[in-house]
Image 1 (cartoon, rainbow, N blue to C red):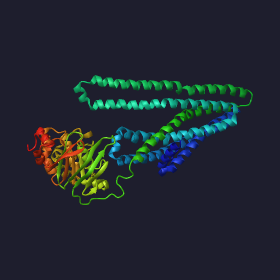
Image 2 (tube, rainbow, N blue to C red):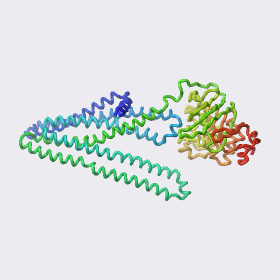
Image 3 (cartoon, rainbow, N blue to C red):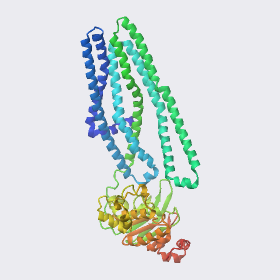
Length: 579
């Protein structure tokens, strides 16, 4: 309970910029409740003081008063909703921004442990739920409570017996609606989850349709989809059964309550202890309170769900480092490009140790190929230099400075990391190249493209650098994606370039051309290249061979070949050195 209260207080703190709007909106909703609750009283007076006595002028006066109250009610409702929605959107805007900024502050290990779909859901679905809570659920809760309280006050003043009937009805309806909400909410959660499962299968099927057709596994995919679709069907049927049982029960209770009121009210009218107007007022009150009573059960349940959504967002925010850089972070103003590993160990969150006491030094301008069997820890070396991960033990240094102590912005200018499968955004080629420097001039972008040997291809396109390349660069070949990623890296003029298996997805001809061009691209850079494709040997001054997380060979290519070790065997198997 205390945790929920703390979450609510923290959530409401996001209203600080529009707190006045929010409070005025709540006050207007209270006025709306009041105007709704006095309408039955005005109807009573119109009947008892006007219609029943033949004083039609009095009846008309009360009719006009009811019209005025209706207009005021509409004004209060419109203004209150506007102010609450405005305040809610403001609060959720900043909450969403805090969550998004926190996600970007998280280290790579967080993303290894967290599904991207969960993060997307928190940024979108959870914030939408909180918006509804602040703008609609809070409004309905306040409106319902005040309407019921004010209505009961007027009902007690008119007739205790009929008020007791109303109270019993309220208790039963709230109980039914609360029970319905408790029973149906978990099913709707499962329906939403199952809908996501079906969407995932459908998306995967469409994305991988070529593979599915090439393997002739359409029937297997259809069977899987059919099973999940049947599960969704069963959940929907179950939800409809509960809705059929509980959804209309309150109307049955209302019908019974109104019949009881007619019975006792009729007797009271005959005995002159109740007027016709008062009976009509009671019946109007029951009809007026029906929707708030139904909404109350849902609102109470939804508040908990909204606070749970807020809690999930706060978990993302609170678990992120307060700052990307430590307080004592420094900048390297004139980087030389020296890299050093000192007894570095790295264990991932899964418990797998990928680097075991790795030590080596790379001189400024030196080109090093890191090779070895899969899972030997090659790519992890690059990720430590780029500070995607922190070593479990030991130090990684650039120009004698621990990478953990270098300001992130400064590090990204010094070190350019090009992954094995570079991500190309669904934007123009210019935007993709200028990703790290959005304000780059066209000349700077073209210069980077020329260095990466991709300018001529881009210039040949009808829209040139304004060509939109599609999601993940689907309209580009593997070599073209690699070159755009290289241009993106070269735009920052880095001193250190990290290439993670740059030729693994290329055909032989494209690979040969890229290897030749990399000689010029990396000319004045310190470069670490991870690859099992030994065509890259001709680019480097030195080779490091990894096995089981350790360095087993280190030296110039020709020296290692003469040595007759692992690298020599790899070269014999590859047959590419000197070719």
